[in-house]
Length: 155
Image 1 (cartoon, helix red, strand yellow):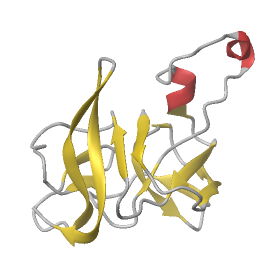
Image 2 (tube, helix red, strand yellow; image 1 turned 135 degrees about the vertical axis):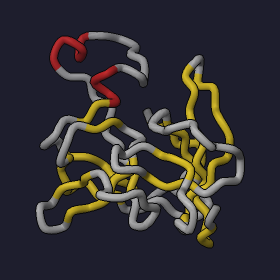
Image 3 (cartoon, helix red, strand yellow; image 1 turned 90 degrees about the vertical axis):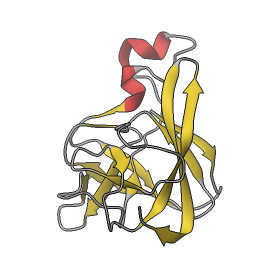
Image 4 (tube, one colour; image 1 turned 45 degrees about the horizontal axis):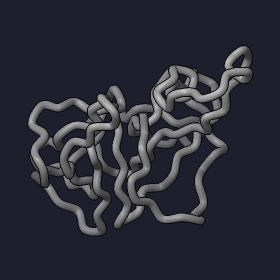
C-alpha cells in the first residue's frame, strides 16, 4: 500500500515499464532499461530507486461494487507483466508504505531497498536520499513514513 502524504504535482511519471515479478504498491524498484521492466535490486541500495504504484481501477465483478478499500488486493497487487506507475521521488516529498521491514527503524535513519523490494534501515556506508520519519496509523494499518531529502545521508 502506498499513501502520498506530500508530493509535487504535475510532474512526469514513468508508465511504460512492466513489472518483472509480482510486487506490491509501495515497494522500491529499479529500472531494467534493456528489458523495459522494473525489478527488485540485486543488492541493498538507495540509488535510482522508484516507488511502485498503480491506478486503483476495479475490474471484473469489482467494477459493480461501490466503495472499495484502498487496501483491496486488486488495488495493491501488481502481477508480473503488468504496467506500473513509477513516480521519480523528489526532495521535499513524503510517502507512507506498508512494504517495510521494521528492524532498526528509528526516526532520522537513512533507508534503502532490499532485494525483496522492502524498505529497510540502510546498511553501514549506504548513502540515501530517503529518511525514515516515523510510523503512520492508517485506520489500523501501520505504514512507514519516508521523507525524500535533497542531500544524501548515511547511518
